[in-house]
Amino acid sequence: MTARSIRGMAAATLAGSLALTAACSNPGGTGAGSGGPKDSAVVGIAYEPETLSPLLGYGKDGNSKIFDGLLAFDTDMRLKPALAAALPEVSQDGLTYTYKLRKGVTFSDGAPFTAKDVVFTYRTVLDPKTNNPSRTELDALKSVEAVGDDTVVFRLAYPYAPFAERTVLAIAPEHVAGKQDVNTGAFTTRPIGTGPYVLTDWSKGEKLSFKANPTYWGGAPEVKKFTMAIIKDDDVRATRLRAGDLDGAILPPNLAAGFKGDKARKTYAAKTYDYRTVTLPTHNEVTGDTAVRRALDVAVDRQAMVDKILEGAGKPAYGPVPTDSEWFAKGTERRHDLDAAKKILDEAGWKPGADGVRVKDGVRAEFPLWYLSGDKLRQDHALAYASDAKKAGIAVKTQGGTWEVIEPRMKTDAVLAGGGSPGDPDFDQYLLLTSRLAGDGFNNMAWYDNKAVDKALEDGRRTNDTVKRRAAYSVVQRELVKNPGYTFLTHIDHLYVVNDDWDGLTTQTEPHDHGLASGPWWNVEAWKPKGGAEKAER
Image (cartoon, rainbow, N blue to C red; front, side, top):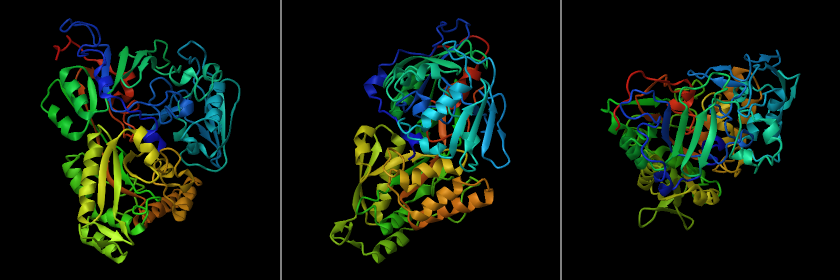
């Protein structure tokens, strides 16, 4: 799991989620059947951020709602100008990126946006004193400078092919954030940006509330009030959607299926890079054994998980790169083969004990596997994984907990984790696998240490040559077959059920992080209320 995937996923209590404001079947405030336009929406998401500061990682992948980056992704994940007036000019050697800025943009407090805000943001992110877990994503950046108020020049230490994609990073205002402690100041929870929405309230564990920014450079949104309800329990989210408390929600496949015949709602399926994986900590005497890792890799029945847990809404995962990606290394698929798993363990000296659990040198082949409480998909994956492992003679003890309980145990205990980032292969592999980030929060949770992988990851991010990059990432994926520090299980399609009250809803190819930045509300500022009278209250 990478820093982007779960950093700051504070657990929302069930009591908190139920305490959210009463029914929002007509959150625009116009009475049912009044004929007034619907100008508000409330959606249910599973996680909330730890911070809303771009300087600490929020909005680094775009769609932050409060902020903008220099660039943004469109529906098809192509880069388009945002705070920049055009795509960057790139030098022939790939080391200099020049951005001309959009004129007339202001922050929501009325202050003008200029090049100095861009320079401040990037320099602060790169400052070692800033608690940004994703700093290594900008390792290639050597310097950033302003040329007047409307030009920014980035200089790289080495050619980094996806650098332009990194400039979707949300930009913070120097005149506000620069006058506070970057790690603890009020800006972390009461931010000011240039985006289409302004934060009006953040009730931790319950909701984030936004209002439309009337001076937004892209035009004032027609959805005037937008609320994200933090509801970590999948069943509760579905129940509240059905009751009319929510206008939309992300749901696991089995719960989304319950709305299939509902003509008042639409289901949106988003393709993703989102995977579920089991960390196999190097510092555990069982999971640190390469033979155990290899055996688990072929003992698991990935297709059964796709069919039974995801109800077909996904595909088997053999690493962080989805099998339909151009960067996937063909031939690294692992076939479910229980006999092969048993043979690997037999040959490595793991012999079945009296109770069927294997033993080697007095050590039982057993280990704990944690999953996030209330997350049904993770729980189901964990239980299926434990069942498959048991057939090979490995005892996996599943247990739910909050991240506050799980994180201190990650060095030795396995975790049913999630991660994945669309786009460049550097995004979804470097933070997950490089040994230099072992134990760095949610980066490299398994403490994976493979010198061949380390070298290939560096080779892949230090060249613009596509052929060389493809070869490097092929090495990474093939090394994961030889020594899998994680058991990758599935790549998951995200399903959203939303009231059919607006036009303009679409989905992008999504990362693991499917809360504030993703879902059909990735472009809520472009939604248009459907004409006619309001739908009857549900």
